Image (cartoon, rainbow, N blue to C red):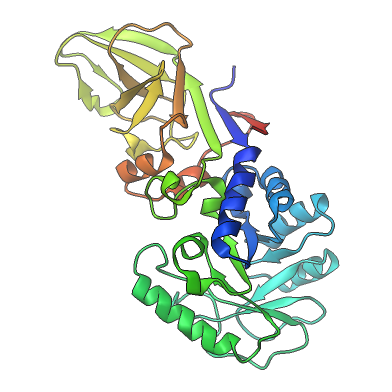
Amino acid sequence: MPRSELTIDLGAVRRNVRTLLRALGGSELWAVLKADGYGHGAVAVAGAALGAGARALCVATVAEGLDLRREFHEARVLVLGPVSNREIAEAREARLELAVSEEPIPEGIPVHVKLDTGMGRYGFGELPVLTREVVGLMSHLATADGDLRFARLQIERFRAAANLYPTLTAHVANSAAALRIPESRFTAARCGIALYGLSPFGSDPVEDGLEPVLTWRSELAAVRLLEPGESTGYGRRFVAQRPTWIGIVPVGYADGFRRDLTGTRVRVAGELRPVIGTVSMDSFAVELDRRLPLGTPVTLIGQGVRAEDHAKVAGTITYELVCGIDSRAQRARRVVVDA
């Protein structure tokens, strides 16, 4: 029996792509597939996104780009992160495109020059001399999900540079900007988190017409009654004050269900139940209102259990939560559906 099962709904991917394209109003959508598609499976999601109208694929590393090139021979694939000289040669041979943040600009490969307009990370402070390899200008917004004043300042800095080269592809918008900042939509927008139906704002994704792609399920592996004064888990963080039924779910922080998710809720037998005690490496406990049979379904994400709500409990963001789910066959089973 797998410890848990991840279901990836490619129909939801396509519907999210169409939602984003409507919001973009004519700008191209470039699908961001870093970290194995934010833990959803890069190849499967890429195929669905391209089929629904995405015009390019974006990854963090050349290795990720090569994986996609093997499946999608003609798609545009842009590597967003830094690359070594050896990787430039590999990228050139595979017909990838590179984001470049410092000189020299590589020869014989399409390049997108990255400007640092306020992220304070990668990027040129001022435009370099552009070579014939340069096909695009790009930047990265630091606060599109919150401080719109600073985001708009970045956009205007970028616009001043993009206006100098109107024939180049210009792209600065991420998911948050694509959905909420119309002036950020230049030639294209690089959308990641919204593609997977997760809110870039940490709110209910339905507010922006998004549909979660991932469902994460497990089941009860043990059920027991705690008498008053008895506890469950490391550190005795939960001590029963009254006779209390608990269920043990065979998923823990090694699977990506984080140690700081104590207090969140999951769905057990169709009902929301609290996670209690300390989340351990391979299991966590839920408080039940009655005895339930072994094998009772438990939904960790999906069916109204939102990754955004887990993130609030853990004090993090949905990006980190879903990227941290271990979908290797040794820990889980990933099932791709087209609903």
